Amino acid sequence: MTLYSSYKDFRKDSSLLKMAYLKRPIDYLWSLLIVIGVIITIISLSYIELPKFMTWSLVSLLSDNKTSGNIIVTPFSSGSLIIVIGFWFLLSLALPYLAKSEEKSFRSLVFGTKNRIITSIKFGLIHMIVGVPLIIALVLSVIGYIYSIFYVTAFNKAIKVNPNTADEVALNVSTSVHSKYNFILITLGAILTILSIKLK
Image (cartoon, rainbow, N blue to C red; front, side):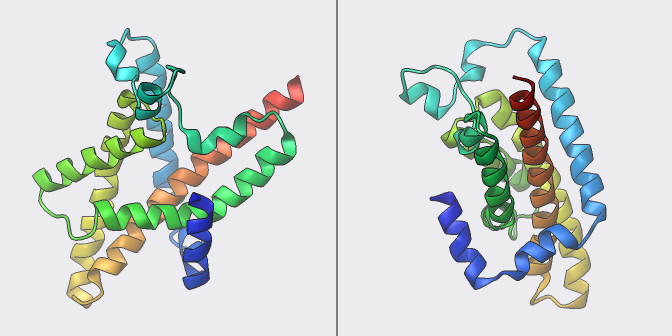
């Protein structure tokens, strides 16, 4: 369903792919730094005995299986090299459209530290719907706030040039970072999955 929705968005605007992956190459560095920060945070959290509720997600609460995890990337656990590579490719095409949708919902015209914190927390918690546990949702809230920094910085620059397009320009900047972060993360996940398949 997610891939189909992204396909419809692609039909409307195929230029988003080029903008997300080929423009603003410096955003790959920022995104990589965020990914490294997330990995270090998750590894650090694994050494802490967290309260049980911090591992809950909507999926774990509604199913007999009490484990949490992002159900969107379930095909990576198929054990099939073809499925992993095919899904990675399709998801890579969809990521910019998913990111743009989230940026419009959680960053567009949101200013002020308090409002940005609130919408960033909402951004993190909404991921619990796809099986992300609460502790990871809170980590994603911090990432959401980082995206808002990119948005507001770009908006403040763009409004001096053209107030009518400032929101769209700023959304493209935060979408660029968001898309590249997701791309690095799923590519890393795909590589590790492929290596584990090959080692079996």
